[in-house]
View 1 (tube, rainbow, N blue to C red):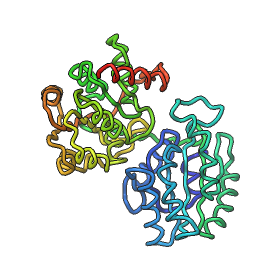
View 2: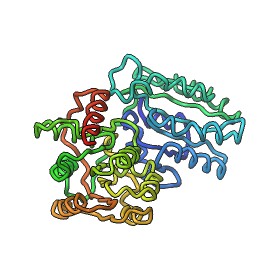
View 3: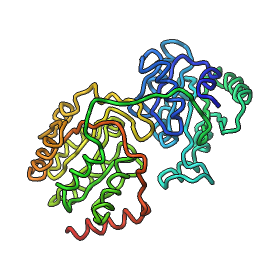
Length: 374
């Protein structure tokens, strides 16, 4: 099904969401059609955020909003679904479009497997009616589903289109780019060169994939790294938990701008706890690159200023390898909480692989290494 046809069938004037590779066709359509005009399209920090924005849109206009997301974000919408949108509370009708990663019997990455198993059930348990869109779904089937959804929505309930892999298409090309020069994989190489044998917690997506391949290329063991292959936005909190309990070891967190935005409150907690052995690195390309390249708001905010306001003793931005190396070396020697924002280009090599170890193997090797550190 064409993404623009689905949008026509739904007939909404407002979309908000978090980008998903499964919904790349829809995301590209929205960017080409609306850009980031907040009257029609807002790319939110997390899925709960966009659900609340959608509620505000309905309150102000009386119209039906659309919230799009990967199924990994269902957890972030459970509370607003139950306590805000529900017909037992405010009865705010909303259409969800959910990319189905980890669909049973469809190969996917380990972090998506269980989420895929419970995707439809979670929506049904939350009293959200669903319709599954696959490669063979005809337009008239989606029309019929939406006609039924209108009855549901008219009762103040919510409905969801669950989108299978490859079900949506969009013919127009969208090029996402910025003016930054440094490649993320090169940035990570510079980080590993300075961090040495220190433990690293890396965020989800291409960051962890590139870190894994850098270790392979350097014939280094993977025990130094905890690859947060899922749980977007939580790598800095994981690093905080480790740093508190390993105060004599420098702990590095390689974060992304989209991930940092998703749960930005974590920075306030980190600053309050003030672990002197933590280096928090946010690689900022202003994009949700792993899932297609749609923009974040990270280029419009002062990340280092936010960090300092949250209690980080030292926060700096680097836009060259010279400045990056200088700040990495200084952070390793410094006995205080540090943040380094690194300005990064959009893009990765086409042949980028994925970790060949399982998540459990990664956890066990990393825990054993931490234990041996004392």
